[in-house]
Length: 531
Image (cartoon, rainbow, N blue to C red; front, side):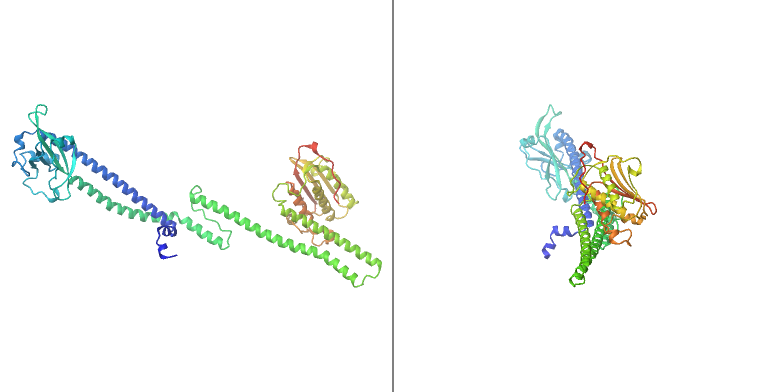
């Protein structure tokens, strides 16, 4: 930026600190207010004193207009500077303060002039008035209104009034004989106003200096919270997201509301960064676990195909056994890929996070009691030795209708995963209970077992992807750890929730809660069980 641009007022103002701007604005406003106050009071004082002089001029003019001609001629005669009659000096000084009385004829010629300071030395700034020519018509035109004229020398202004002079005993019975002009100096008025302006200048300047210093400390103290906010923001920018803006002012002040808003924003940012870090960590774990899970069946298939290629499988029986193992590993690999793709679609469509049905669901009125009855047959097909019962929620009473608006095929997948989880993670012969019914505003389906149960730490992670409570189990019996993650995602996609109630030694109960569908007349017959 050039030096000329640096000197531009807009650039200087833009680069000034907030403290300097506030102080400068305050000083400018104080100066403008004090100047306006001085102008108003000064003009009011000048107008008030001028009105007093005008009132005194009118009263004096009426007196001098009625004086007998002998009094008017007591002075030195025609011309100016005549001595005033005895007693007139005291009267004029008390009333007007050293006035000049000028008598003029009808045609405006000065007949005589009486100076109250005759015989005394009149200073230069108290010189006489420089009167214009005032004939009878000019005096009548002024209508007895005071007017201002300059002095014969110096800067003193004079206030004058011209009225017709009357000769006779009374104003009504007399006759006009020229005019009388009474002039009073405005030096007292101007001096008083000038002294007032001088006082205003000195006191105003001192007041501005004092208020400027006081304003500097006040603004500095008032903006101290902004400095603390700046320091906190710098620490947050350095990576400390746990920092918060200190509450240095009341909650209803501007600074208090700003601190509250910033702390709320910082809390959201910290939560967002923590969620992002957790999401990245989960994605890293997911990729690592998925790679590990996919590598195991692929390694088995590759090893078996290598044996066949090397000619190690000479007998037909060995070939058939190897092909059966390859088929099993392929089926397992296909199921694992299908589960991972399903979870990926959930993530893509935000299923399980919005609380609303996602785009992959085909919703229709469905009775959970039908799914519970099919789950009973699934348990008996998986392990005929297990005792299995169909009850109401929490094992109380008989099963009742539980209508819900759901995707039946997806709910069957949920029930199948829960039943398979109960069979796979409990010893053979362990009893399983399937409950169905309504609880409050929810349609409920639960799968409970009497197995070894889960610890609180296991319960907190049981719905995470690739999590296995018993890591010693083989993948053939323990699975890949995606079944319950799929259950949680599908149930949440139906605007429901899945709960777990478990403790070591007293089994585990998985409870699915969906919003109750009020119109039971729309319930349709169940479709076939998904394979």
